[in-house]
Amino acid sequence: MQKRTSRLLFLAVIFCFLITSCDSKSVYDVYKSVPDQWNKDSIASFNFKAPDTLKNYDLYVQLRNTNDYQFSNLFLIVELNYPNGKAVKDTLEYKMAAPNGELLGTGFSDIKENKLWFRGFKAPFQFEEEGDYTVIIQHAMRNNGDVNGIMNLEGITDIGFRVEQAQK
Image (cartoon, rainbow, N blue to C red):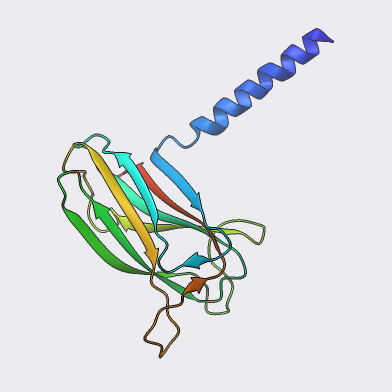
């Protein structure tokens, strides 16, 4: 019996090692949960140290959403703050649903995961400075014809930010 238990424990350790080592491109990958609804004034903030300043990286905004998300697109304001105080702010639009209304993303359940380009898609991205970087993400959704934004966005469950070593 003890030999069988040892074998199962060994297989479990190998399995865990394989699962954690499969994502070797990831340098930083963190999610933050959204309680119930994403308020337009609520920001998701991600702090990380710059990896190697000589290598190229791909930066992604990651989202998990449910079928409660009612829009075919998503507008985000994403700000990248450099260690020296420089800040770059972008308003970005992402496609979230196919023309037939089916939500895009990966996942077999009612939760879809979306990995959305932020930097590195058109040109290689390098961290220019050593030190601490901060990324701030806020939604900027509004209904057509409305001046004011949607106060509480339903259907987004988690907001994430990911840095990967570029494969280019």
